[in-house]
Image (cartoon, rainbow, N blue to C red):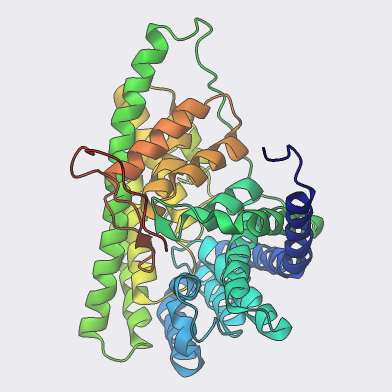
Length: 437
């Protein structure tokens, strides 16, 4: 009979906990500080753009500068988040240290002049780059470098959004569709929590979102059943829209490369298209980060949580603006624009379905992101961290169904498929163990 207490095993677990905590602390501190610097600078350049509307007309010039910088010295850093993921899958040349300053500068230029982009890609790339440099300086083994890169992703994501649990789960879930990377459980958790604490310690505050809907006091009655059915319908559309965003962005990127051979000129063309879109739509609501705006009545992520806070096609316009910006070669992330797209779509669907606007804006916020990144668990937890736990079941239903309906495409081309989303046949006999990575 085995002993109930195996002291050697517990001592080994304690050593694992202490070793990885000490090993990832520098990565977490560096990533959290980098996110704080980035968020502070992003706020500065966004306010500058608000104050000087003419900056938009320099977007093509800014695009050339970003494209030229990456063409001149970017090299492998041009692959961005996908390079980090590839290095985790199959360690090779490593993540270059220049990725962090390049993506920071490139993203700030994009936002200063009005490109529609986000911030998650920047934070993840800075975290991964800093983790890569740290791993090389410390001379850690190849397998440990892989885990350090995952810790960098977790610290960057958790700190830039103020969602430490989401950051940890995202780093394990995003690499392979249908399979979690539990070998990095402790490092990513420590890195994400500490990174978020460090970012907050620098005085950075994140946007606060509210969902006032708390359901009916009648328990699981007819009202909740009807609402759940509406959530399922909306979630299907959230998944389809997330797939459309990913595939449109990839398709436009191929077309830019096909018709414009010299890479620095691609963002020039993209900048001209964005300016044209502004005049076509007649508003600047779809430029920049999209969280808030100084203009009364503007469509933003925050406004989408209110009745009348988004137009029927706001989600589509933000999708087009962002796909053009990122496909052309401007820098930034996709996630915050996905929040905008989802919240605006949720606002529209709530009015069509007769559902609570704030709840459906929140569901779209996390579910479109879940479908585009294939990370339903992380996004469910994000809903809890950002909006509270009172609507957890609706969060999970929206994210899981959006994940199912988004297909196997996603915004990260380096993401691999471990377990298909839909079984091709019912299992017979004893189930086979999943193949090892």
